[in-house]
Image (cartoon, rainbow, N blue to C red; front, top):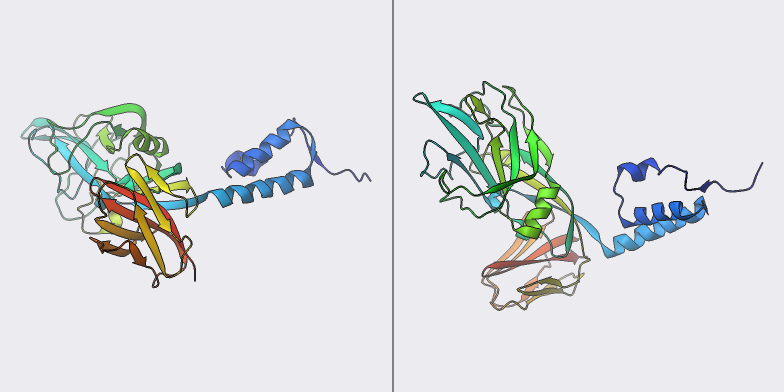
Length: 331
């Protein structure tokens, strides 16, 4: 029997785990080595895990869960062109009739992305919408193909003032088509909106638009809005990001945030170079749940002695901007 170790060569297919899962920079180094020349598998494996270790030392994955309570949602009706519907319990893309006259409904959702950490790379973003069912509110029942588009909004709007006549513009670039659901009223879970969220971060966050593919009666997609009482059924956006390590300063064009010492056990200093004083300091779990809040702080020293060990997001609020950085608490 030969003592020669198995080798990867140019003709060897990529390992299935790398073909199917984005392992990160370490995986790309691994693939590069296997393509570059034949190399002993033990050497490749050692280099692969070493590169993974380096990458995870430099970057950490975080999951941020957002609801429209951190943003806005509203619908607009063509038969009520100057009426605002920002407080309805539903955001129903649809088309119906009233008194024999057809009308169209379009809806808009915007999540507050300012809680995302600074210096990030978005790896995944998933939108979940919950169907409005049996609420006793006299909702209509879809009767035709109700496939609808999710589009990125490209101009500003306000939940409290938007109407059919003032609805924002949208783009069809990268739009997502949700297929006909008939009368089954399913929840629309984990819709991949990664490209849209990346564009929102890069070009301006004006949210999503929901509109029918065919805007003619009688079609409806009944969806709960953020004003529904059961907050487990409101729209949700889950964003996964790779971000810089704790302790690295968070920069924006408006200033710089520094949280130190980091890691910390009992207290940290929140130092922001923005031109305005801090109006609020919030510390949240990665899920978005607030665990500490200081309004109008009189000092930039924050007592964290009651927080369990873990990774948190520190938000420093100033007029017109929010700075975010990571904090590691150790016990």
